[in-house]
Image (cartoon, rainbow, N blue to C red; front, top):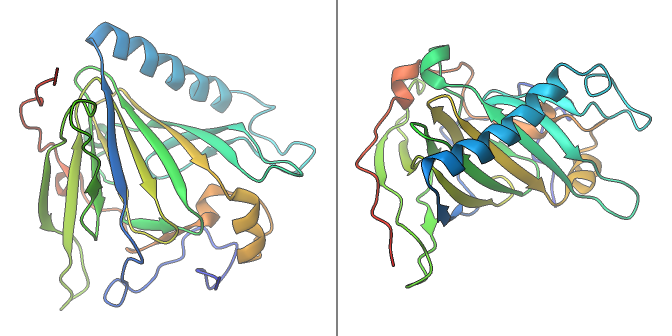
Length: 249
């Protein structure tokens, strides 16, 4: 496979939005809906792990392998719960989302140098707006899939003069688990609309992508390629919340 990055260790590399084309599509699978008190307890427990790590000297300094487990990304704080090792090249991150409205800015559209598997989890009063430059493939197994997430399109904000791109959006509703399979190099963005949202993210080829891109270490930001130079204003990913989808069964 060819490299996706120009400068392997750059943490803010920008690719040309006008010429970018997704090599595939993100696949979204609704998993479960929960009572508010259950969702709050689960999301809160995962978020607390990240917050504890952020305050930990051990997690914020390089370990014996040079890995810093507690890092920061545009959407929130992250903690590498499980790191790769010889013979096992995958790892797992937890992300504690920022509240987009509270920060006043949205995350940028981006892609990764390796494939990702994410489980988005929301608490009461919080949803996640997911965006991509390509339509989502949404799993629907009759009698099993618990709900169909809301989808809509709009114009990608802050594009260069003369460039228009359609953005495809999907809403993860409150108190739910939704999975997303992200192929290597496929555009996406996440923005939490509310205070209680986390992601459990598995990177099945972490060591492979670091080697393939000739990076000097495991840094999530350096494994990201952006499609915009600046973070857009909060209104560009504002709450588009519809009535919660009915439960099936």
